[in-house]
Structures are given as structure tokens and as C-alpha cells.
Image (tube, rainbow, N blue to C red; front, side, top):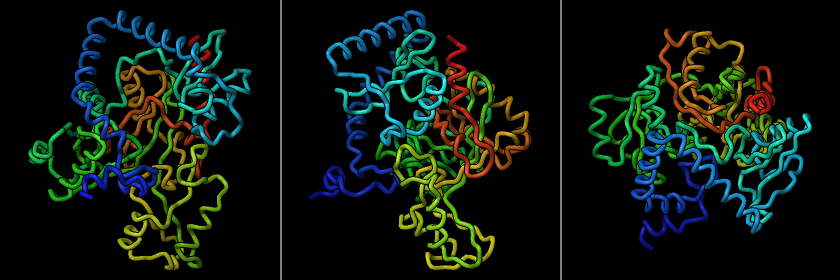
Length: 416
């Protein structure tokens, strides 16, 4: 079978560029989306034009369409509401935390299921004597259209640039040739990532030569035609969650690691860390912390680069890393940093919130020391998420847990 066809129909192996998330190398859904890219792109342009020129009319029309569609889908029982079981393993922890917090307040949340069986990450909630439908978090109703698509990395980059806020310099491309010409202006090191991807899938960091850049562009385009090339900034990645304009929590995500004690091998240290009951398997949705995967290709490469192997006894205090990304499913640690944020940085996060136009955001912010002012440190707002994983603030490895779910419900109740 030709290589292109073997890739498309290979459903058995896991995509190494999505590691540790389970995803077929075929990426069939993304490839299908790519076929319709020109039509979808035209539709988005038309939608943005109408929203800018006729915002009120667009909002009313969208609400009418969505609400009418919901009524129809419920009437014919394509959508059905169902009670949610405690610790439902098919739901993300961010939603389970909202459900648990709502139960304490006497608020009932139901799952909207396809034909009453399959979860689709949509929910209903009675609040202030009104039923609302939402996705993931009860911050934006299904019928509402945010004024800004903050999940579009390039649109966010342009927005940050307009408002003079720190961002990694870069541009969006759909062709390799244009990307190679661009590096003459920006130089190395670089990061390449899909335009609208998430969870660091098909993202390549710290690119230092043209050969690696070409490979990074190829990897990004496996899942999406458009990709972003931007400068690589060194530092720690913090997730800062802002609710209703208030910075309520911040945490640092550290790549999967073990710390030597002079007695145990790397393998034994990983096993000890993985026995923590707070850690689930790599793709368990109802866990926030996850087990480290010592047998992954990424772990093997990094161990070799650090001059150790799985049987090495690590000296006391020596830390080694087993993945180069800070994604939680890879086994990353979470350290609460809420109380050490510099006041200038808090002001910065509030400015980012003001330009985004959504009730709750999760800001990915990179800086070497968040306790120092962003005016004195190289830093950047990397991404903004409109449906942030708030559970990471509830389950830090070190520091104080933050009840962000409670803050969100307080906001929902107060806004009516």
C-alpha cells in the first residue's frame, strides 16, 4: 500500500505528535476538515463581517437559530437530558467540579446526551429560575456568540499586538515557502504550532535550524493547513484563570519529572510517584494529575539526553525530566503560584481579560519568575482559553488548592 494511504488508514498506532493523548496517525477528521477549508474560511470571513457591521442583529439571529434547533432536537429526542452520576469517568474533571459545587448550593445540572446515550460535553442548568445550556463550563450559553474568538491563536496574537500587550512575535502561514522566508525577519529559536490546535498537539518548540523548521511545519500541517511560526521564549508556563475580571488562581505546570534520593532507580522513582492516588492513567478524563509514562518514545529520548537510563540510581536532589511538554496527561506536576504574582502582572492579566470579551478565561503566560514585574522580564501571553481546565487549580502537587468552580458559580449567580 502506498505510504499516503497506509497513513490514512492506520488506526492502530498512536500519533507520536499527539503524545500522550490517544489519537490515530490517520487524523481522518482533521483531513476531512482540510478538504472543506476554503469553504469554511469563506464562511468565517462572512460571519466576522456581519458581526462587526451588525452585532445586535447577528446576536439575535444566532440566538434564534440555536434556540430553535435545541427545541427541535429535544422534541425529536436526538438530544436527551440525563442525571449525572458521581465521578462519571466520561466527563472532564473541570465539569465534575462545577457539578459538585452546584450540588452544594442546591443547583441541579444535567448532561445533554445524544439519543440519551453518548455524552457530547453539553449540559443544562437551572439557575436564577432560568434554564441555560452550556458547553463544559456555565460561563457562555450555547446561544451566545463571543465578540472575540480567543481560541484562535492568530486572532489573539493580533489583538495583543494592537493593545500593546506582550506576545511572542510571529505570523500565520499556509505554505512552507512563506514560512522559510519569514525566519529572515525573526531568526531562531522558534516554535511552530497549528493555528487552532490545543493541548500542544503537533507543536514543536525550540527549533534552531532550517531543517528542523521544515519538519516542524510538516508536522503542524498534518492536522491543519494553517500554522503559526513564532519566537521561542524561555521560562515557566503559568496558567492564570480570570473570572469576571478577577484573577482568582495561578499555577505553574512542570514537565513530568522525578527527584533522586540516592537509593532508587529512575524506574522505581517513577513507580513511587505513579502510586499517588491522585494520579490517573494518561487519558482518564476524571483525573487532573496523571501517571508518568516511562515507556514513551519521548521519555526514552530525554533520558538519553540527560545521560541516564531507566535503571540509573539518581543521586540525592538530582531531578530528571521525562517529557518536554507541560501537558497534564503526560504526568506534569502542578504548583500553585497565586499568592506570589507581582501586582504588575495581575494588572496585565486584567487587561488581557478586558480585550477578550468572555466571562472566564485561562491565560497561558510564560515568564522566568512570575513574582517579578513583566516590565523587567522577557515574557509573553501564549494563549487564551475560553473553556479553561479549572481543575488544575483544585489539585496542585504543591501549594494551596483554589476553589475556582465556586468562583465561577458565584459569578453565574450574581450576573443573573
